Image 1 (spheres, rainbow, N blue to C red):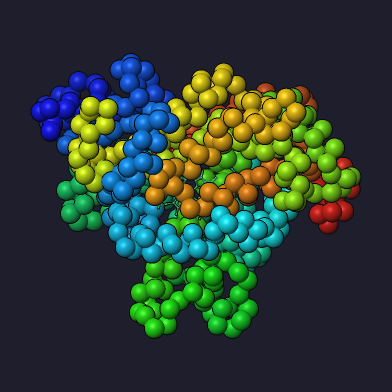
Image 2: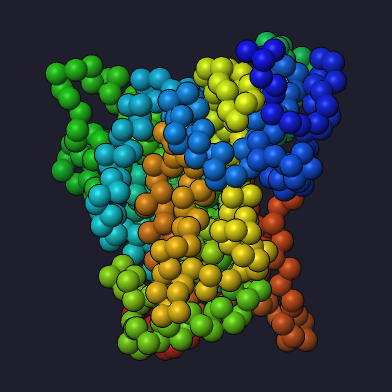
Amino acid sequence: RRKTFPFPPGPKKLPIVGNLFHMPKKGFVWLEYAEMCRRYDSDIIHLSALGNSIVVLNSARAVNDLLEKRSSMYSSRPSTTMLGELMGWESGFALRPNDDIWKAQRKIVTQAMPPTDPKRFHSKQLSGTHDLLRALPQSDDVMKSLQTWAAKFIMDITYGIQGDEAKLYLCTAIETLNSIAVAATPGAFYVDQITILKYIPEWFPGASFKQKAREWNKLRVKLIDDPYLVTKARLAAGTATPSLTSLALEEIDHTQDVAHQEEIIKLASVTAYGGGSDTTVAYLGGFIIAMLMNPEVQTKAHRELEKVLGPGDLPSFSDEPTLSYITAIVREVIRYNPVVPLAIPHLLTQDNIYKGYFLPKGSIIMPNVWSILHNEEDYPKPELFNPSRFLDAEWKLNPNVKDPATAAFGFGRRACPGKHIAIASLWITVASILACYTIEPELDENGKPIKPKGEWYSGPTLFNHPLPFKCRFIPRSRDMEASLGVSLS
Ligand code: HEM
């Protein structure tokens, strides 16, 4: 088949190393892939690196044709040595190949968070958001505060562990999430390219990655076990608040192997915990930066909120249909700087032909979410942050403009199972921050506003996130203080 059908276009391959030296190594890699696709005038390109076949899909059409319509063969995951094998994350379902354990873990999450019951976690989302509102004015480093808050808030949704008690697990959780971010960075560890290195002993010069992997694996195991055991004990005592883990434990079939089912629940819970934390943080950071850079958007949002809410009222989920501009801001934040811009790579499990091109079994498939969400046809002037693009002349959501969530949360059988809960969390948080505060730039020593830079991490990463920044949250009314029960100034 390879003789009859060529590979998709791409840079010329060198003997043995293939395109190793053409692979984007730094900067925003999704932009480099988009540029490569422009250069070869194709929405599908092929590269190879040390024998690995890599296919980049740069349009909604190609992604839909392959990852959605041919999902059965495009939905596995490539193996990763450092993160998956040595640190142990391949046992969790985000990095697992398509097997029965992946299916069982995924089912646990989709049953606990079904899109058909969006209200299930509303009260937790609301109280988590109010905690954040209280914390923001004290924040010196917005991204750090968001990360601490999310680690706590998602602990409640995943395990039902709340308030100060969640602090017991925060250190492990944050260290674990940071270790994932480091290990998932392309090129961070040679062992991902030269897998044979995984066999060298820890004491061997240059093998410090093995020690790191061992320590990070320990953290993973601690994060899997500790909160899980608390939830299990609470459920037995009848004191558990509903959470992903408690709901799954209630569904255990006692006529089957209980230990096996518990293992699946533990892995599903910790994977959901990992999947939901830093992604939400990066989008909220992106939202705050967007408000600093586009004050006119913030003013419009304040006007809409004033029309709908009474003085001192905080938004609730029931306000969503009347707060179209807030929904439009959330959509634009999701579109403008997608936080997982190449999704999580998929693996093709059979040889396949597409548009006359040969795509070999074992190819790593990278959907370029950023390109899809910055495509001029769907989103004219995509480089502008413009929430109004989602509204019609009557200020209602325009159904003809594609909701960016259709791409930002991935595709086919691997699409994010936390999508609905994540969008709801973003919506209530964005609405509440804007209802409560005006977000303003930090002041310099002379009391003058410092022009916000709005910088995003530009090192090699598959996870797009803002760099640390400072800003001020100015309370909009004293009535809010009464609603939240604290002094915000
Ligand atoms: C704004 C927040 C979030 C974003 C942007 C996001 C985005 C994504 C993306 C792009 C993928 C890869 C899909 C693919 O491979 O095609 C994914 C997978 C996943 N997400 Fe999310 N996610 C978010 C929140 C959450 C939440 C709250 C959970 C908790 C349940 C979650 C759990 C997962 C899991 C477990 C996977 C792996 C699914 C699989 O491989 O079968 N995510 N997410």
